[in-house]
Length: 137
Image (spheres, rainbow, N blue to C red):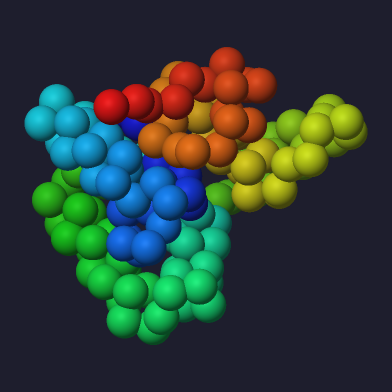
């Protein structure tokens, strides 16, 4: 399983993103390898919001269509944050006082820990502080 972060979704969806070409190549490679993708409701929220503000409404809608299609094809699992994961994220957030992390990053780390995911499709180097490798071309 590969955890998909906001930056990867944005790069896939927004052709003007600096990582777009690389994201398309990585995504194609992972799909050829028949990898299963995991993301969270927090990541979807963050991605839709950023695409709406930074790109446009239509780009955000196309992203939501991709999510729905991927779920229907059983290639994407969306983890919805429940109390235990939330509390795990709080614990992770508390331990990193010298590293600037978003709470969503900490939720993502908690998901990776719980589901034993050790690789992320992301452009955020913060994943590596939790021992989660980043996918490459």
